Length: 309
Image (tube, rainbow, N blue to C red):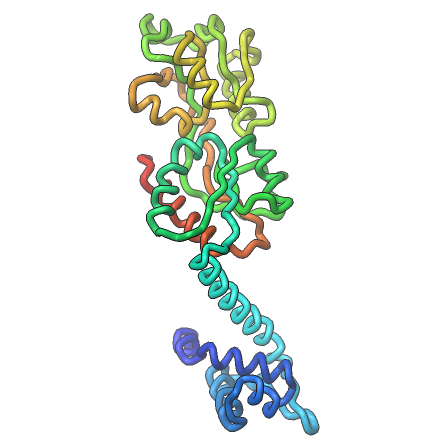
């Protein structure tokens, strides 16, 4: 029955119902819609037949909305508004007047999926602009909350930080311990976790989203405090420093996936499965994605789908 109703209800039914409800008059609604009064009456009758309930009734010399009609009116108005927003979004996009899509990307996705997603996005030949900023998760979420960003792409934040947001999972990843090719730890005998203490480590900052995962892993392996450490969220610095020294870099695998694949960096044989966490899209629950944002979200899904699992 639901499928049949969906097929029978058209945009003109919603538009006519909303207008009659607003005007409280078939005659005035007909004038506004530029159709005849019998046409308005016929359209309302078709809508009521499709719904199986009365949505309008006589009220003296006028018309009023029934209780069930009031319930349906909210949804009909929202549907018309959403459709108009979609049309306006496409029109603005085609004219090059659409506001830029503002994306907050954690370093792991900036390296791993954003380039591929942007290639797909640009391949659609839209005139929409995209602004990409990166930084720590807490900073990006705060910018999203106040409306300075439209979406944040990265690891799922802690529950207390997710109020007012919705999250869509794309893939999961672990934290890795990586070193340069030819590092002394790779040339010795069996790897022992305590051997790491002799080297400088690049650690995620204390406000970084992966820091708690890393700290739990170190405690579990008997290294609650690493003597020589540098805290950073700069993957540009981390990459340059680790490739030119014997430092150990503790970082999300997405940041260094290409470096490892190309042989410049090597992952140490450490079980980091307990650091695995979801990566995805975070948006405000009250936001209605524009055409451009919706398109970018789709290309991000496609780029994430291409990651080997």
